[in-house]
Image (cartoon, rainbow, N blue to C red; front, side, top):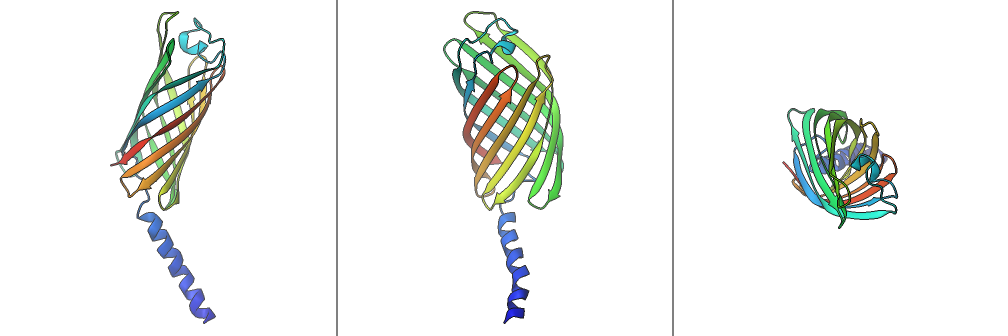
Length: 206
C-alpha cells in the first residue's frame, strides 16, 4: 500500500502542474489592459515634472486612466507600451512609454522579463506653463503563476531623467480562463519625493 502511494505521488504532482499550466500566461506577453489609476503625491513630488516651476505645498491625490499593451514577437522577445494620465482640478501628469525586451524562462511557471525603452512625461498646472520631458528607462522583474488563476508580476524600473525616478510595482492578474483577467496593481515610486499608486482594471491576454 505504501509503495502504491509513493508511486502515485509523482502522478498527482504532474496532474496539479498540468492544471496550473492550463491557465499559465507567464510566457505570453501579448495583452491589452486598461483601467483606473489612483495616485498620491507627497508634498513636493510634483516639482520635477513641472521643471521646478510648481511645488505642491501639500500631499495631493490624483485620479485617471491607464492603457497597457504587450506583444510577443517570439517565445522570449516582446514589445511593450503604456500610457496613463492622472489629474485633479489644478494639475495633471500624463505619461507614455514604448520599449522592447526579453522574457527569460527560469521554470515552467516563472520568467524574468527585462526591457528598455523611452518614457515621456507631460505635466500641466493652472499656475505654470506645461512641461514635457523624455528619457530612457530600463525595467526588470519576475513573473510567476502562483496559483491556477493568479499571476503575480513584480518589477523595478529606473527612469534616466536628470532627476531620476525609481518605481517598484506589483501587479496581480486574476484570470477567468486563459484570456480574460481582473487586475489589481500597487506602485511605490520616488523621484524627488514619494509617489504611490493603485490600479484596478481588466486585461485580455491575446
